[in-house]
Length: 356
Image 1 (cartoon, rainbow, N blue to C red):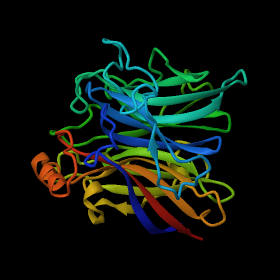
Image 2: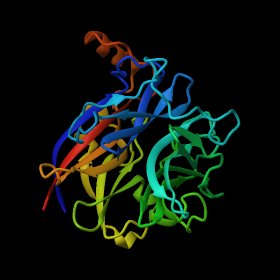
Image 3: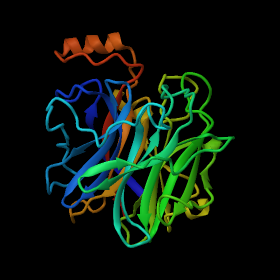
Image 4: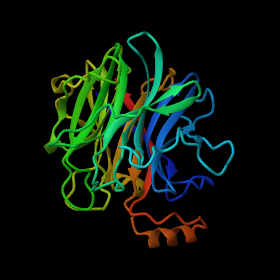
C-alpha cells in the first residue's frame, strides 16, 4: 500500500472565526458521513457558555468530497448562531459539561428497525484536560426530526483507567463496532500522555459490549483509531494519530497521521498491519496543524475520477498559541480578533492518491 499526498486544505479555523457565527468559539473533531445525496459533517463546538455541544455542516446537495464549500447549519430563529443537535445535559449529569468527538452511525437494532445515533464522549468535569471527573461514552438518537440524549453512558472506564473517550463506531456485518481510548486522565500541562486504544462490539450498540481488546497500548501512544472500508473489493483501513501537543511541550510524541490495513473490521492487532505507515507529518506542515492532528475520518471518492483518492478529515492544532501575536496578525490582515484561548483549532482535509 502506497499513498501520494495530493494536497491539504483548511476548511474551518478558530483564528479566522466562523463567518459571523457568534455562539461557537472553537470547533473540531469532524465526523463526515453521506446522508441520502448530501455530505454532512458532525463536529464538536466549544460554546460561549464554555460547554461543548454537537453541530453540523453540509456540502451542497449532490456535491462530492472534492468540494470544499462547507456551510455550518444555522439556527432558524437566530441566523448568527450555529444550530446544536440538542441542548446540553442538566447540571449534575455525567455529561453536563459537554459532548465531545461526535460519531454518526446508522445501524439496525436486533428487532430489525433502522436507527440513527451520534456517539460522543461526555464530560462531567469543568476541565477539558486534567479533568477531575471521568469521561464516559454515550449517544444521541434521532426520533423523527429531533435528536434525544440517551440518559446513561454505554461505555465507562475502570478503576485503573477511569476515562473512556474518542468513540469511533461503525455498523458492520450486523454488529456495532467501537474503537475507543482509555486513560487515567486526559493529559494537560503536566504529565506524559498515556493512552490505550480498545475495541468492543455489541449487537444493539447499547448493552452487552464484548470484553475490550487492546489494539494499541500505552508505549505506542496512539489516540484515535478510525476505520473505513478500503477501495479494494475487500478489507478495511485504519487511520490513527497521537494526542495533540496542546501546550507545545518538548519532548512529546511525534504528531501526524498513520494508516494500517486489515482484512476485517475488528480489534485483533494481528489483523492489522504490523507497522503503521506515516501519511501526514505535522512537523512538515503549515502552522495551522503543526502542533498535531486528531479525530481523523476517511472516505474514498465515489467517481471513476477519484475512486483512488482517500479524503481524510481531521482536527488541526495551531503551533502559535500566543493570543497577542495572533491578534496583531489579524489586525495587520484586517481580520476580526479571535476569542482568547490557550490553544487554537482548525478543521482540515487531506487528499491522498492510492498507488495500485
